[in-house]
Image (cartoon, rainbow, N blue to C red; front, top):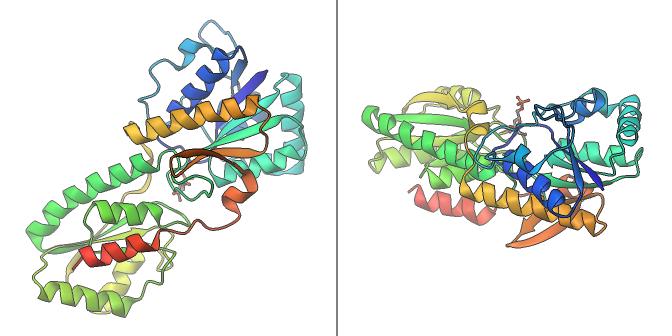
Length: 329
Ligand code: F6P
């Protein structure tokens, strides 16, 4: 088989570890791997991986030492052209022209939407790997990159706590997660934050003010409020303004972590998850799997149809929200 591998959508730490696992799993079984640069857009432009000696196929050494690297050596993109009928037909033609039998995309919900659409125009196999810091895909407990993003955000929170404590201040820290509170909730728990604002729960200004007053009366000097970018308040800047005008009892500062969370060397958890899922994706494909994402649910490897990974919202664990409230007392 000739298998195409690419990364698509927002990059996530561990995409390289996953690419390495896909390449080595396929080569070890005697198959060929074509690396596609810049996701669906690169496919449309026939922008394929080439070694320095212009060899088009990936080799064992093509992925040497990338397990520890952030970003993606294949590059990534979001492609509006691919989302059109003409783009999908063109992509199908290019895959046939290069005799590619199967694809392993690494990405998030947008990537899998693309895979579902492509399957209407192309009859090759597609088995995906979940690569996104958001952890918003069903069919896997954790996505590749989530653990590293949380690690980065917690490091930031720890540092902010030092200065917040010195100045008796409150920090509103905005983390990523367009539609999901996962990064915010895990960052808040691990960083010992007093509160979290996420899209899954209503953000009520009077309640937050009451909590802040209570915490101040109990002798709290500093407050960390972690805000998901997708929170209905509109993010940390807007929430800060709302809290100030409602009589926030702390002097506040705002920090948006932004794309910082997408970079850096993947944690061991992400490297292991990426390696397991990349290997599982290839092995499943060789056994005939198609139109599915490789994931890990309660420690067990699992395949889930693409549609089922994104059609419903992945709820954040409610019990963790309660634990956070108890800890913030
Ligand atoms: O989906 C991953 C993600 O990092 C989201 O958390 C964030 O909202 C978005 O990508 C940012 O996208 P871009 O890199 O295009 O600004």
